[in-house]
Image (cartoon, rainbow, N blue to C red; front, top):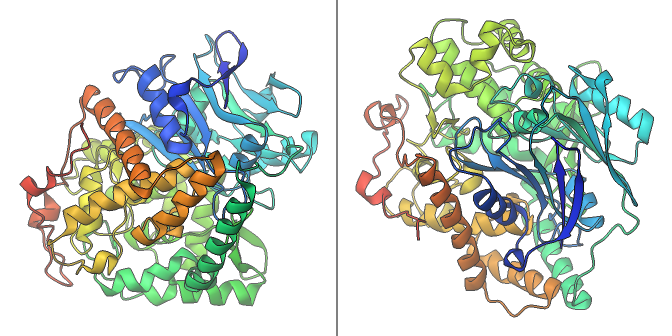
Length: 562
């Protein structure tokens, strides 16, 4: 295990073996462990005392299916909590191929800088790149690929990050070299930008795969797992994550017009089937892998009506939060908003929730595509309005006097109304990450429960949060499924990779330990919220008369503080 530390004040780059306490950790397990130990919980998120950690999952870089995730961790400027956001593409696999277990940015330049970190086979160096200042991610990637070669992977921040926006993402290039993969949640793009880092260029490693200790057993288990996923994930492959539009709309949980209803009668215009149809008609693609070795291939390449590339990875969350939640039902317009956010380095989810709150305040009408574009651009320009919107839904709601702000711990909700999907609502309320479905998403039918009823949802959410942490530690995409039936094969991969003798319960215990570390950090930071905004308990959804009625005392049963 090799840690690379980049001191952005002194420009010193050091390499050291990881301490033994970090053995068997990767991904979110490693980012949260390092942040909790080295960053004061009350530190200013954009100050010199915060750190930003990039850590490939423990299995990232191997032949395990869907194991290409890279975790990014820091104290979040959006939530004030410890934060992890992970991203696909090739960055995690390339870092793992270079033997880098964690890349840690610390300190802060005395003066504003615009630099890049270049990681090659034999050297890691900082370079000044003032020519990139203020550029969008697509222009940054084009310039850096021209200079360093198209085989390099690039992580970058857009102008929103340079503005210090709490909605700023970190872009990663996809398999085709486009900056369409994003570590979006928590404003971590602004943390990297605060260190004076505009981009990271990672050369293709000499050895494309990381070898397992028990290579034969690992390969056999990986192939068996891949065959299983190939067979069971056909709907995701054909229709992408947008396949969820009709099912979530069907149970009355599709956020519409700032979570004012859970059913959108226009959903057929932006559902997975419609997305698939347009991709096929226009020369785009479905079944597109976001990283090497993906057995699910739920991504897509979206073209406009003239057959020109618009964006890649047009996902359910983006479609619903920038679309339905804002009263916008035109898939072409939603795709253009996705491209705009990708280029400017903005989390589409937080932006969608923020715009919904802004529309409820009356600053713009629901469904006005042109005004939405202008509002998003204002974040990157740093106008007065942009500085407000750039701080996310919670701050925007406070400033505009909006009571109905769908957020927890400062983070806007994902594209599931918690009144209709109560298990996900429990996760929103209790997760260490804030309102984040990727912490433990209870989709309709999960655990054999009725998602409309509160019974069993707390136990289900706690199990999902633990199993999701296992995926995040290993670097396995959550679309594999944080499910009990997947734990044995993930444990076998864990064992054969490092010559270990663990059982599934051991991985679950490791996951709960990391959740405890995150909880302790948040409590020390003064953040203990464990419920949803009040209106979800008092305002029934008009389409099904549901409220979030999981008992507040029962929510307290989820306590990783141990």
